[in-house]
Picture 1 (cartoon, one colour):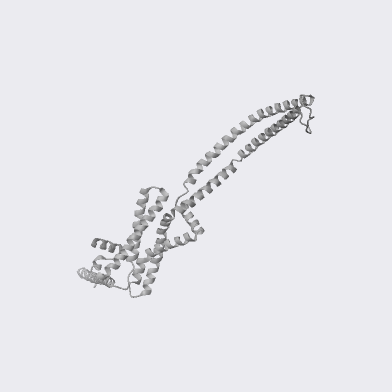
Picture 2: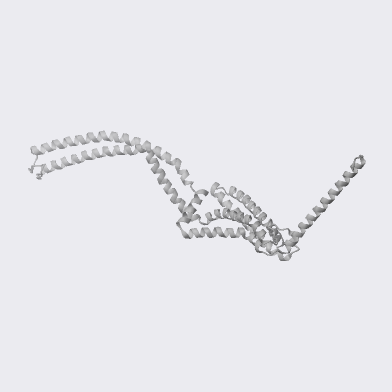
Length: 343
């Protein structure tokens, strides 16, 4: 416990030899040091996660997280240690305001990556929606960029329509021929059973329609095969362009994308908005707690001993300054006397 206590004293920026003389102050500075230490620890975790989302490397995340945590720890320790208790509350608040602003800024920076981790599932869902929309937009853009495919498809559909029309005409002639043979009375048939002259005419018309259909199919099939080949090439080129875009869409889950997703979620849901605010305020409270403890706590024995120690240093420095100046004057007089100079 003694080692842990001294460690938290160090974290609070207090001078341990003086604290040992003021047992009533030890717990206060242990609390301040613990807050500073755990704030640095949370900063390390936060920065490590933030960097992991960027590089996806645990080693980079751990290394940067430790450096960032130590930097935040050192800044917090400096902020707390530089605050001195005086008998002037207004002066203390003036001294504390810039430190409070800086502490709030640090709290926001630390809390943001942890908020991303807390709302990770919701953010991933929003990112999936964004990726789906990006895929659809990319396909539409590529479709517009390869408009030749639509023209070729239209030509192919036109050829199919011509073949379908010729097939329908052949089927119509076939039906009339069958009605004529079996004696079915219609507007285009005589109603006489058998292969009479009308039936033979219908048969000749059917043969011509069948030959025309076969010739049309053969010619159009060659054209459609050519169109299919061109469409296949252009489709392959379009797919190749999409394959180039696909990795960027799949990798759309970096820090900036997650921050944007979190902002959208807080706008869509009041619950997430207030949860986000509460988490940020929690970190602000933790980060500013040591400063407020220093401000609201009364001036204690440690502060008195610290002022006394500084006063001793100041008095000693003044004494040494006076002694140095006197000795310098004496040396100058001795020098002038030895060289016959006017004193």
